[in-house]
View 1: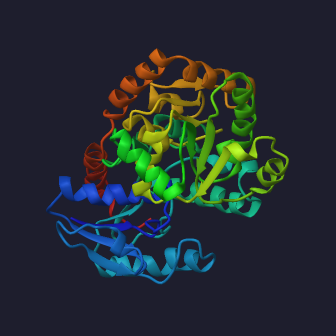
View 2 (view 1 turned 30 degrees about the vertical axis):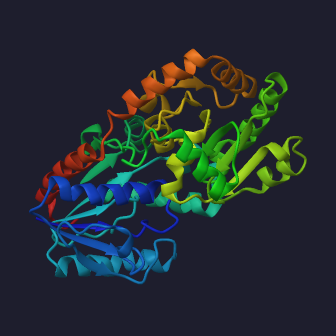
Length: 381
């Protein structure tokens, strides 16, 4: 079987989708050593894969997925010719992007979330219009859809009227680097690289409205007023979009000296930051999966997260859930966990057990099963 996968989101400063693609392609080689893989990417993407078990074939492009409308023209008119020339059996768009024309190959697409439909105010208007069009077309044209959670599957069925039988739910998983670490080595790394000492609460994610950082900052004020220990709030993530309201709020924030924005953090440093934290707080308004909560739990860090979207599905009973719109409630949950050593220990143990249920090997195995089914749909639309 010949399988083509778009890897253009695997960048040096990748976030959730890029990490999904990277871990998927690395683990597909563990479950399938017979197929021929074609990785579609720009020259800068290939060195980041680290895949050398069976060298893949490269389909090199100069077109970035963010370069609209050039990328759309290339994707829907030129890419199909390239795939047909290579006689590919399956094309996988792991970041919602697929060609809308088939020429002898089947198509599957991974849908991570429907934020463009459910929380359009949290993304730029033009981008929202584009994503709503793209997602409608993608779920229509694809032979099979991979949803990263049951919640995303439900959104696809209720909002885009996708038949449930067309959807395969395949969860993501934490990478193996996320694990409990020696406390002394963690403290040394954090001090050397970030000048970070003392107790802190941690959050990671792209800086954008959906991550609900203003409410987290407001809750942190209440926490500091009611707890004697001088906790800091450490926030990691690259600047996304619509950050103006957060910037304006932070200008008059009364505890600026206790907030540390690290900016983008290389993946190899994230396990240290998570291990060093007293608590990981992730009060997102909406997540298709919410991988950071699993990564934190894999490190044995207690987690507080939102009681909405996919997050309860992912964390089970191994994290404390709270309404992301309730600042007082979020602060109370943080205070309760920080004030109760026995609860933190319970969350550490339960979190590790819950996170261990998710593996990239299983994700890759289920994805390969989808490929085998899609290969039988290699007919023109």
